[in-house]
Length: 445
Image (cartoon, rainbow, N blue to C red):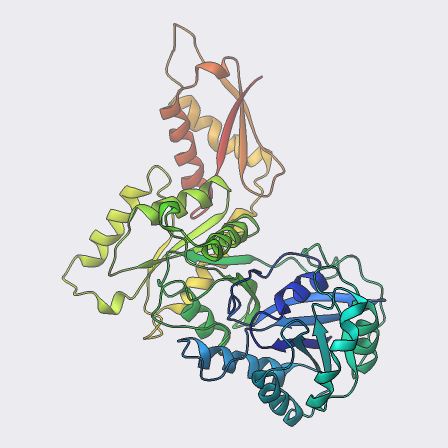
């Protein structure tokens, strides 16, 4: 599949065009310049030709921005990876020195470069864009990324330039579900508070600087999706922005970053909760864990920066016990202590996540479920309520994407919550649902 990279200085409309091409509002767009920082990947198609699209951060020089050099590095990596490049400029602001500097860089790449003049919202502006011919990049393509005008002619030319054109009519790429001939693989989202080490973990797993890493909280803004395939494991990996308490989120950009992180949780199969060992397991970590549980996602807790903790004989056990007490009653969760910097137990974290995915997909045969649990229930029957004798006759698992069990009995309204927890613990003990939230319902027989 061919790769198309969109580059340009800040605030020329790269993310707006990216969202239009992929058919989804995946990249955050805002009037503030420098919103996008990492490389952002998506898929698009034009006239039956599929291709990948890369959105990049705004290319700047000597701006004083702490992220400047890292963003430029991400842009260079996207240019090296791409088969062709869309160089976006702003018709309203006209030709700038940064445009000229970036044009020099792109000419050196020896890749097909399409000069795209954005924000041409009326025919009156077409005569004002001729100054961009000074860049020496050939034909100009005037478009409006907001309305989509002019993008058809541009995509015709882009698709014709691809080295290998695959003309197959795929189903709409707006649906992120894999194709029928591709086996389903786990979707793993890495979530947590800002500066817990999420992006560092992603970069270490992928073996390249996929996302920008700095000591500044809130460096990652968009949810960054990558495919991992190594050591016998294959999954879709999503790096997310740090999730702070709602009261501390004051900027619109951070609000959208948090919303995309929450959406990544909703679209995932398993979440790895990154916890900063120096800060401990605090109330916001509990909130994130509860959000994962409410969405019925598998979960693994990874305590990062464990190398920075002064340890005694029982430090590990005490920290783990503290976490389990705070996440009760759902305590049956794998907890791992790691150090991304020291590369300690990193592969183990994703192995645990894949194992949780497999357990989450477990379907227990009805006969086995009844043969195992009914004798336990007979020995430990539900307590009488209002002199009502409760008899559970039959158990089945519903065909859902997470474990739901239905117990058929004569008086479902009288089954108490503590007995429900007893049954859940029995299911976990007999069938191993470590890291998987399960639900239990009682119905009239």
